[in-house]
Length: 204
Image (tube, rainbow, N blue to C red; front, side, top):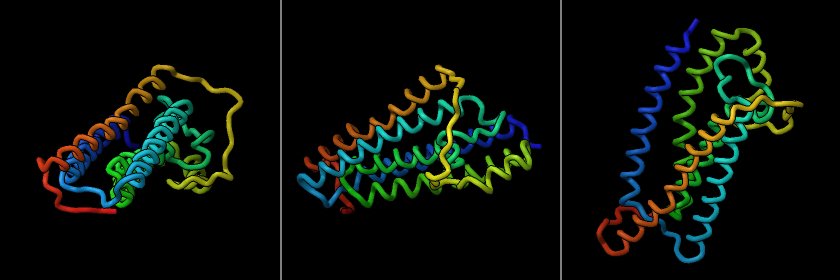
């Protein structure tokens, strides 16, 4: 049986790997610019902001159900009744929103795909831990509920919830970091406009 300590060490390495990937993406953005101009550029950015808001709200929704219980019991209601990894689903939506702040649909989709691929390896490792610790009940849950993409027809809810406010506040605070993408991309765009940063690639 895998221990919480072993899973924690893996999650620390996972966070480091994701941080490195994000750093490389941010560096690449310094030299990439959207082909879209005018209203279309603004519409893409605005749509991205709406995705970021949805991601933050979705992650808070997940925390209402999972807050601190992920490694101690199988949560199967609320967002966890439709997908086994709703936190990662909403984080991927947020990644698309971040990419959209460049005004490029291609960059937005690339951010979402890369986020999904990064989480895919994390999910498989976490599944091994959960199967080792919960056995058949978790296997039955896996057989019924999709790993990532939600199946809305499966939704079911609890009559009551035990909420840990500190977990909810922390999730909200963590999610606000998503909004940093907007001023960051605006600064990059300004520096490109005044030729401080060279544009090496233009994408729609």
